[in-house]
Image (cartoon, rainbow, N blue to C red; front, top):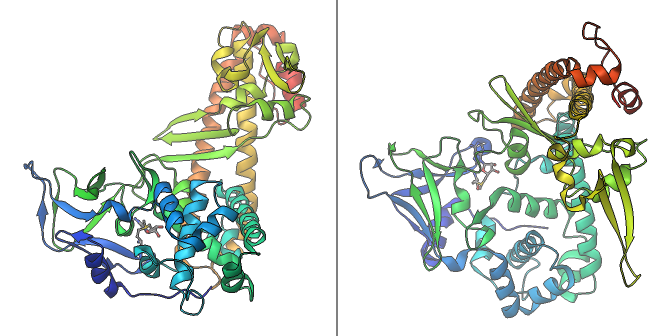
Amino acid sequence: MYRDHLPLTALPAWCKLNDVNFLDSKVEDLGGSKGFGLITERSLNSKETFDIPTLLTIPRDLILSGEAVEEHAKADGAFRQLIEAAGGKSLRGDVMLYLLMQVTIGSPDRGMNVGLSTAWTAYVKMMPGVVPVPTMWCEEERILLLGTSLEMAVNAKLAALQREFETLREQTASIVWCEKCWWDDDALEFRDWILVDAWYRSRSLELPDIGQCMVPVLDMVNHSSQANAYYEHISSNGVSLLMRPDKLLEVGSEITISYGDIKSEAEMLFSYGFIDQQSINKSLALTLEPFPDDPFGKAKAAAFGGPPVLRISVEQDDVQWECPFLYFMLLNEEDGLEFRMLQQTDGTRSQLKVFWQGSDVTDATNTFESLISNHPLNDLFKLRAMALLQDRLRQQLERLYESEEEVQLVADTPLVGLHQRSNAMLLRKSEKLTLEKAFAAADMQKNELLDSKVVLHYLGRTGDEEPEEETTNHEEVEEDFS
Ligand SMILES: C[S@@+](CC[C@H](N)C(=O)[O-])C[C@H]1O[C@@H](n2cnc3c(N)ncnc32)[C@H](O)[C@@H]1O
């Protein structure tokens, strides 16, 4: 859809009209992929003072929250029609519809006489037309993510966005203004929906009392892991941006906040379109699937309380990993795991119940690591866990190595943007290192476990026999360790 643009020079007037106040700060175009950012207009000091400088204030009625969307639907009949037909599924979905409505109202050839203008109608015209998140990358750029933890995540996200867009079309095709403004000549395109999703992902934030929301102008502040500012919300006054204590900022310094200290590089790239090279957080998340030949596989996936994710983090050479599903995944009937379908007393519904050693653990399927800790074969279970962990790491590393040639073929072509290239290469390098370190750490743990009395006894070996080769599939793991 054609989107009207307003230059950055329009921002001061918009702020004045809407009571947004800059205090010794202003928004400037910082160029490159960073886009706009907030900078100081004079030197500022928060050292040895209780009088912490405020840099920006935004009134509460500008905050785009779930409640604001609901209120707006009461006042704007056209928007109400849209929300009734296609909204109410999630906060994110409703805010995206609100943003799309503002773009439509502000579009010179479509929006006439549709909907009520708000402060956001002009504000969205100053928001970027491209956000460097991977859902906005071209096909060649997405090839650079092959073998990384984002490969599947980005494909799944694009497929989900496509489904959402088709559903939006189906649910609003009979609304007269939607038909006229969006669907008649396919003015609203899939890439518009991708952009609105990217806005929400890269510009929304969490405020206490309000939850996930968007705050205009505050969303022009960039990220740094050594942030010099923070925001706070005081319900009567709205949102303020304040300088962090003990800082000295020269005139023209960039004012930054933290988008989240514990986000992994992949999460940063996925949500914001860049990797912070100063960040020391080296972690990644991989999905895990039950074994295809596990007779309990489907039941385990259904009974597990959360996504089956393996999280690995590496600090210096210390590798930590967390995967509650792994401990559930490795158990079977012979170990004492049972599934039962229990009929409700009225006979209408049945419920899947999980039992471990005879006890009902349906609500505790993500705690198997501690449930098995007192079991006499705990070391053996842990050994199985290490073998499974290594399998998953090996699989991911192989995908990274195998894709290298294909990646190199496109990386230097003009089809790939420099920003996309450098960020994808950083991710590949960093994830490879993390996976290799995690693999080596799992190997050490596995070897230690192979020396455990329980394991040696179970495998019928004496202590001085060589451990067997690593296992690569479920059957071998079962033969060796169960
Ligand atoms: C909340 S917006 C910040 C304002 C944005 N720069 C703009 O032009 O409107 C978040 C986006 O800013 C960019 N950004 C923020 N911090 C960055 C950083 N440290 N390095 C590179 N880009 C950054 C990314 O494109 C990110 O998606």
